[in-house]
Length: 357
Image (cartoon, rainbow, N blue to C red; front, side, top):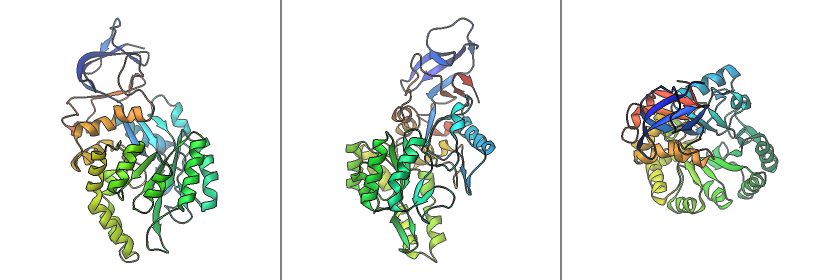
């Protein structure tokens, strides 16, 4: 394989260096005959921390569509995807050198008739621990719970399972070496999950001040999916006629979402960038989520770090572009710390040492 040269400013250190790629890995020792491939700001591969590869509005998609989704994410610079629930068997993606690295959580675990049809396993409380064990064995170190959803009986958001069942499910997952994350829109579900030792919260729009402090102290991460929570007014409008209480809840959560995100930031909660690609949100839009997080008030430099080197470290991958590290990085024409809009315009995408976009 031809040695490649990428001169530029290497983040996060911000030093101007010549990055060389040889046999799929990074080196700073100049090899003979290296060809210059691109110049610019060089950023460790982006991380989509909330992704649903293999999912669309109707449920699982075929392998051709999975490939299209993965390429859309890859070409947008997302080279590491954390699956947050998918009904499709996407394990084959991990064998493709030209597709993003993938950490799978298996299928969502939801309450019977309390989630989107064809997305997850819909089960009763007594079944949850066994299904958690099953998905922990089948996945790559994560299990995804649907923490709350609209209850037709209540006419509003309600926890999917009782507190003691959530606690047992998290215990079983940890026993099997898996971390647990949960979809959480409302307030009622959050305290039982935090008290049970959950590892991550998705969306988290119902979080209170005491809870973000508890998360920070316990190292519980938050993926706020700001583009997704921006849709709450539409959800409220759609449900107003049949479920007025739910409609009011969603409007209230929407009104507080900036306060929640900023209070989590101020408390020191580790936050990561997730596009929610799959289903209502399409793939290839991680840049949009980064910009949405900045627009809600988070510092652009913190958002970039969360979308790149901090996100990689959180998921157990090389955080920076160190000597000998796998060559997964993106080159931009402008400094993304100052202008997150450049994330829409990668000049080069390098995955496993190959220029793929």
